[in-house]
Length: 138
Image (cartoon, rainbow, N blue to C red; front, side, top):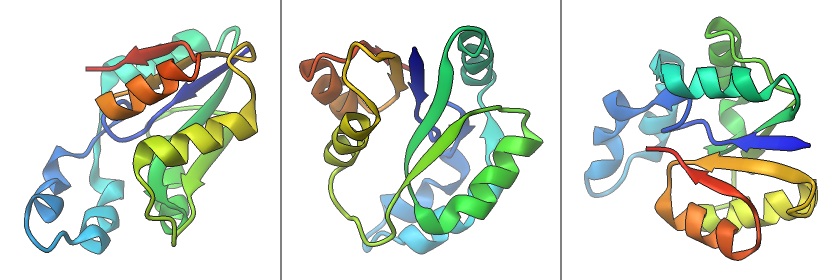
């Protein structure tokens, strides 16, 4: 079985960089430039560790591909082990629910994916509607 985890809001606390996207215009470049300074969310990291015993861990994030090096370094520093890291293509500006639904379909059907953990309510409802078992991480 596969367990899929979001990063921002589940594993990484992005609140210190949120101000970049709360303003108009949103400064996504500055927002993503600070991913390496995130604090870990202990409960999320613990849940990944618990699931890793009998699940393949896939991290699925709306972070752009351009953040891969910083994201991988942060995950290693925080001791978060995974089998695969899927990031949004740099030029993909589709809603997170659309991106993640497509990425999950490429990974496998709901019977192959044992659990998806995400903090975005829109993503949770979309994926649950497609038949995936989803936990809304709060």
